Amino acid sequence: MTTTTDSRLRTIEVALGSRSYAVSIGPGLLGDHVRWRSALRGRHALVVSNTTVAPLYLDRVAEGLDSLHWSSFLLDDGEAHKTFANVGRALEALAQLGATRDACVVALGGGVVGDLAGFSAACWMRGIDFIQMPTTLLSMVDSSVGGKTGVNLPAGKNLVGAFHQPRAVVADTDTLATLPDREYRAGLAEVVKGAAIGDPAFFAWLEQHAAALMARETAPLIEAIARKVQYKAGVVARDETEQGERALLNLGHSFGHALETAGKYSVLLHGEGVAVGMLLAARLSEHLGMSGAADTARLHRLLAALDLPTAIPAGMDPAQLLALMRLDKKNLAGTLRLILWRGIGRAEIVGGVDEQAVLSVLRAATG
Image 1 (cartoon, rainbow, N blue to C red):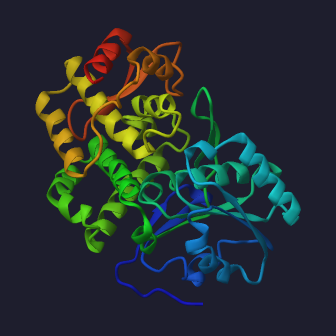
Image 2 (image 1 turned 180 degrees about the vertical axis):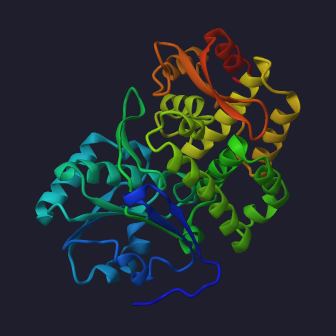
Image 3 (image 1 turned 90 degrees about the vertical axis):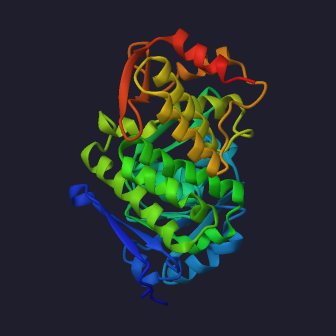
């Protein structure tokens, strides 16, 4: 076993009373078994990963499980595999392991792995422990924190799921060295989202450090991850099950999920959908007189500086996108309920949004 003494290590608490947990961020953490091993309370562990991540990092995690009865369950890589069928396979793996109610599911991978592993943990014996070990930037700054789990349906993304908080989050930033550029940039979109929602000073910091983040410089990267996680942890602590403020974290998601679904989860990565979705939300806010063109332009420039998409992919039908947005979980009483803004750092929930205004913005952004 090794321990980490690196001064770059950051620890952020998600304060939920007796269910509070730590988010550890820094290099070398997967091999720091002393840090995360104590979060496993029983004798059984199932490591859920995928065929891309497991060959790189599963052995490192396995060294910390040597005294347990454990096995692994591997998904194919990609959003298309976040399905009920694979939840069933994960549950069968728990059954074959003989997992009891004090077992733990370890999610080693990105958001797809974390969502499916967490949902499987929530289902097994009505809820067992799980640990998030995110290996993508997007999952480090967003999906691994807050306890949202779930799977996709053909009708839409994340329509089935549960709130199930992890016992711990272990974000080893060394894993980002093997992350493809496109997936890394997709994670930066979620960082931008946090600043756009409620932290204008962080947004300005991102504008100043965009080049350093694109170069994956260690210190700015850890700072960006920590600031985004700190912001989200505060929101989750105040509104765990998304009854109010937490819905703001979905800025751009109603548009983005529709784009992902329309592309059958193969055209845009989640973070790319969020990037385009945020810009569409900003343009709709401007169209409705809620915000000014200068804020929209700043968002567009920052997304472009991070080499993120800012346009609806060719061939997508605005009417179909609007129909998909009607299935969004935030909608109430059959009307669109979107996260819009009054400028950078001032997002708000807006109910009863005019569908024709949305359609107009979609048409204007369609090539």
